[in-house]
Figure 1 (cartoon, rainbow, N blue to C red):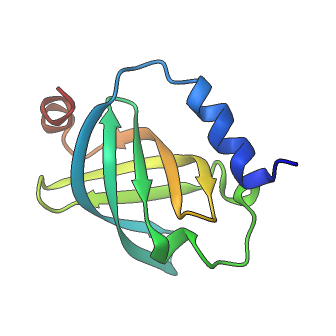
Figure 2: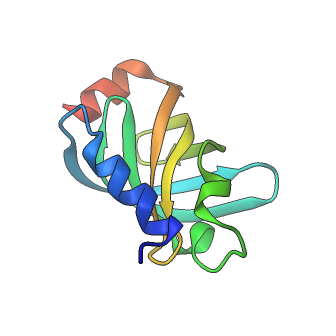
Length: 115
């Protein structure tokens, strides 16, 4: 039997429209006023990024379907970029998720990073 957490992950894997670039970048994540944490991104594309953050996603008493669509801000200090987006899917067991990018603080820098 599949849980809600794995359902979102499997659905989003089938919806990838862009090639993703494999990277390893440290990120800072902010959701609302109360939830902050560190994480890492392993692949990026012009319109999305995969992330892993045990501080943010693992251990919270929430369901992944409650997080889907929530707004999130991701900072990449090494590149001086801030990304505003919404959560596409989350796997609360592993602390992994994906973000659909709405806007960036520097579109040209983001494009260079994605190539």
